Length: 174
Image (cartoon, rainbow, N blue to C red):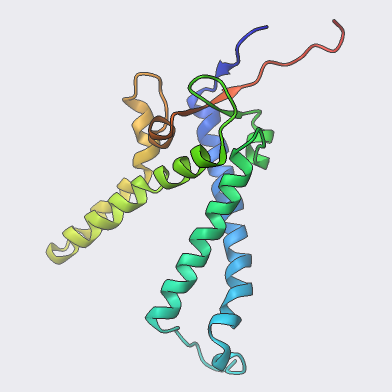
């Protein structure tokens, strides 16, 4: 039996863009469902835009972060795949070729936040001197990492000990 081939960078980036679109749609739906629960006093105020209090915004962020984590962990673990992974014919495996456990999938999810966290920290540091916009490129840091990684892995895959591969097709005529 032949081992699965590593997926190319273009294929992985295409799947990542598709995944981002689906995840944003999922989070929009979740936000739409959660916001009336978090701001019940403003449900009838259709004439004005009300920005929720900071505590409500933090709760909403935590809820959306958890929903995204649940989606990713469920889809990445125990041999399951997301729709973009199926579309681009990708499978997530560990460095040893096994299917990731939920714990490893959760590690991959947290590691995927490295770039956005760096961008936020750089923005906070650079904003007082008027250079906050220069922090934006760091959002893509995890993906840019593949350009210098010896195995062309994304940073979150390197940290979590995972990789995306193209599964070997089973020939049904044999």
